[in-house]
Length: 82
Image (cartoon, rainbow, N blue to C red; front, side):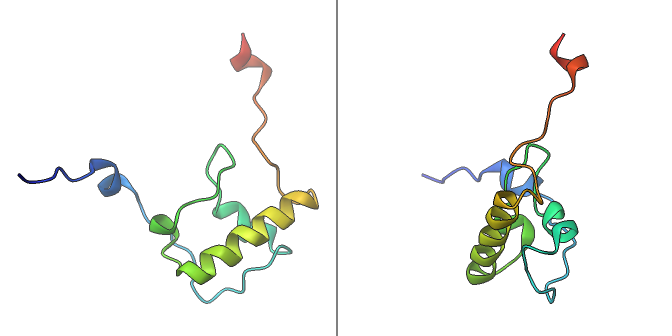
């Protein structure tokens, strides 16, 4: 019996991130590119980072959130609440 392939994986568009950039919590503009609209950290499938670099990225994002350089979540506008 053949397994079905997950169609969601095909729909992922890889981000055009510079692989040679130094990941640091101080580089908030770069870290914003690695977040989804909801403020979640983008997966390795989209960033095309290695396991080691993805862990460094996650740690930098969490550190930047703690220092209030990045938001934990996106604020909802009052118009969408009505």
